[in-house]
Amino acid sequence: DVSPAVVTVTGAAGSIGYASLFRIAAGAMLGHDRPVRLRLLELPAAVTAAEGTAMELEDGAFPLLESIDIFDDARTAFDGAQFGLLIGARPRTKGMERAELLAANSAIFAEQGRIINDVAAQDIRVIVVGNPANTNAAVAAANAPDVPGERFTALTRLDHNRAIAQLARRTGTPVGRISRVTIWGNHSASQYPDIFHARVGDTPGAEIAADERWLVEDFIPTVATRGTAIIEARGASSAASAANATIDHVHDWVLGTAGDDWTSVAMPSTGAYGIREGLVSSVPARAAGGRWEIVEGLDINDFSRARIDASVAELEGELDAVAKLSRA
Ligand code: NDP
Image 1 (spheres, helix red, strand yellow):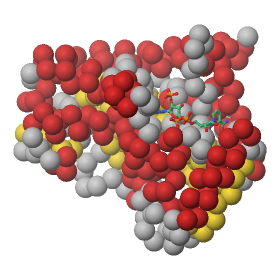
Image 2: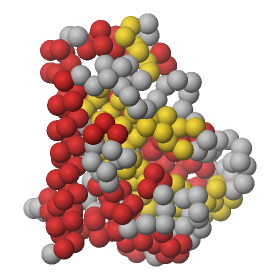
Image 3: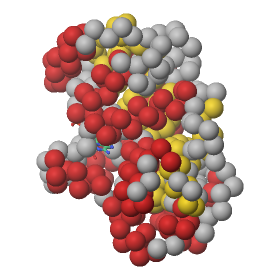
């Protein structure tokens, strides 16, 4: 498909937005032959900053970039959108309770879900990056009854890429020779990076996982808390790597995953692997023909089961809290 793609990016003036837009304009997300029309949504207070980013995008003279429009109104921003990169979210501020954060974000994502339902293109594909990403995606999907649920996804590709990088570092294997890693559950510290089905060069991941001490005390916590380590080192949260993962996610969704490899995608559960329907949990997935398909039938050992269950329980807690708030 080389028709121009309409891409709406929320939180476009933020750090992840800034790091994403130039690569989208350069063709890294949808292919180097597909023109893009960018639609940037920002809060009124950040519209001027978004205008500055748009000026820089213009100055990139990207041959694939057909247009850039800036909005502070979601209904106009999502009109005809084929891709929704939902990056903007209410950050947790000092003294804010977790319930307040959930309430603020569920209101934003319920509204965006309704709007996407009403005005986006028939083939809209959504990726939620703004935290709590999985639950925000579940809320948006629940408010868009006319859009197939599988079109609402959340980002766990960054966790996936982090897991590959840690495996590469541990084993001295080039990242390109590592496949079939899985992130299960929530994009939070409870996530479970699973290497039991991975291939690390010619070595089965299960063989590497047999070093249980390294797995439990080093690999899993390093991947799960990498975001915090980056904040401590950089003095700011990860932005370019989050943007890179967002682009990888959409790229694979549209253009397909490579060979027999899979990636990790948080998408509404169909009940596979015993995950409650409606939760947006990360699972192993392949894309073909523009659709994600869960990789089913993997053997889940007791070690993995307990960790998947714990992260899914956290997702249940978040979604139940949101449901309670909306009844209150
Ligand atoms: P960033 O661009 O750094 O982050 C945006 C969101 O992505 C945050 O919710 C952040 O979560 C989340 N995120 C998910 N994964 C990661 C990751 N691995 N590393 C870092 N962040 C991750 O935030 P900024 O504050 O720079 O920009 C946000 C923009 O969104 C602002 O310009 C603001 O005006 C806009 N905004 C738009 C809204 C809307 O469109 N309705 C609502 C609120 C804000 P976390 O907070 O946990 O780091």
